[in-house]
Amino acid sequence: MSFVPKYIIKRMVPPDALKNVDTDGKGKVDGFALKYVNVLAPMKIEKNLDVEDLKKQLFDADLEMDGKKLDVKKAAICATGKKFTIENIADIGGMELPVGGCLYIYYPLPGGLAAGKHVLHLKTKYKERVDETTLERDLSGTMTSKDLLAKS
Image 1: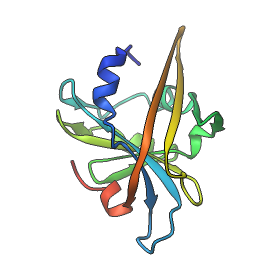
Image 2 (image 1 turned 135 degrees about the vertical axis):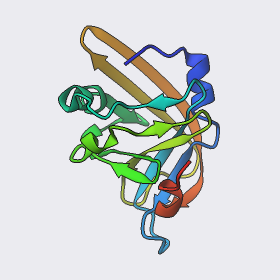
Image 3 (image 1 turned 90 degrees about the vertical axis):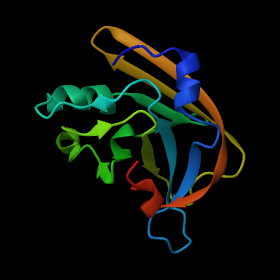
Image 4 (image 1 turned 120 degrees about the vertical axis):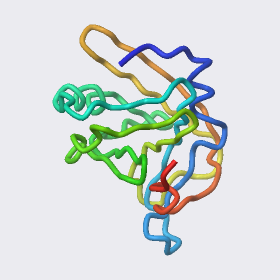
């Protein structure tokens, strides 16, 4: 993973990026999602990617929400109308995300997050490089899985 300056990360994760998710649309929150907006350049993931390498980059990270460690392997990436988990991450090959396109990181959490400000801390390790990012965002409502899986 490449280093991204903090001022770019702030543009990538807008103020309204953190939402609870009601996956079945019946009013019961069962997780939360963080929205990322592609502000840099069109992004294309090669079709014949090294799946094990990608798993290490994405799922060997340390993730905390409000000081509580979360199991990254339970998270999913939702983009271009599809949901990618550790089981089907190979299917992300060939995905294209245009400038202005969005993806969500979804995490299952019964009841979701409480109203108010939350602190997300992400530490990624790839080869010899370690990058850490801390984001503070207010919870900005609830979305459904239809919103989560909408094509950007």
